[in-house]
Length: 76
Image 1 (cartoon, one colour):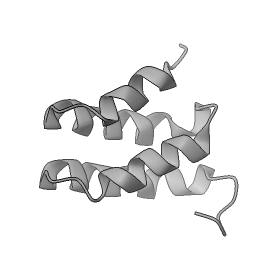
Image 2 (image 1 turned 90 degrees about the vertical axis):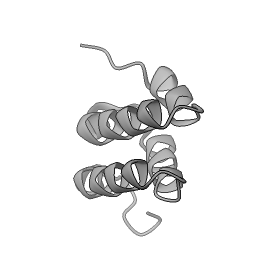
Image 3 (image 1 turned 45 degrees about the horizontal axis):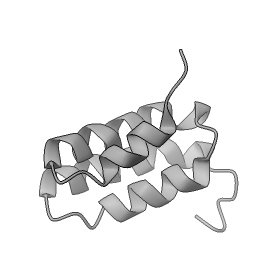
Image 4 (image 1 turned 180 degrees about the vertical axis):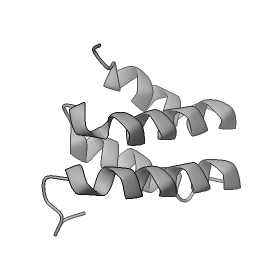
């Protein structure tokens, strides 16, 4: 199954908190197969500062899942 990272990225910018939360979850669960891991990492990092606590919590959990797959752990 191919993951549409651009679509997920757009959803991280949505006005709808539920869409942002779902996007964070998808980024975390699919991080290992995403082409642009640094963009995904940046999206998740940005979402940890979201106004919705549920988005922040999901993004933080996703960062934990994604970290083993980050190519440059020093930069992350």
